[in-house]
Image (cartoon, rainbow, N blue to C red; front, side, top):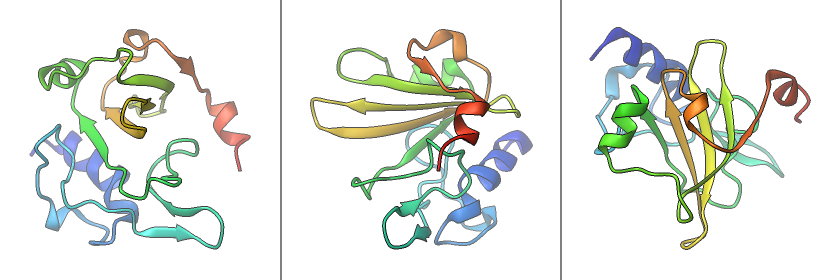
Length: 142
């Protein structure tokens, strides 16, 4: 596994995973480069519920859909390899470019009433049409 991918998985997924805080239990998922064993292991009690600890505010809460998985892609081209396409069935809602150059995309699949979270480890912010969240927006969230 490339060191950049390993670092991203450790920071984004392992930070709050029920499996532990390192990549020793990593199992490559069938989609993207993220860990298939990842599960939200941090709960803000009593109201918020489970969160993805390594993600920025606005992207870390699972909400009512406790089974939500996040998918990590090395590049936007890798994202396209899995035949993902943002359209009327997979609608990006928010996008955010982190200081490390990772693009976070939060959206909804309205036909099946399911949220999604995609993370691309490169800057592809200009390739996604939706509302861009800034660091100031994130700092202002509870």
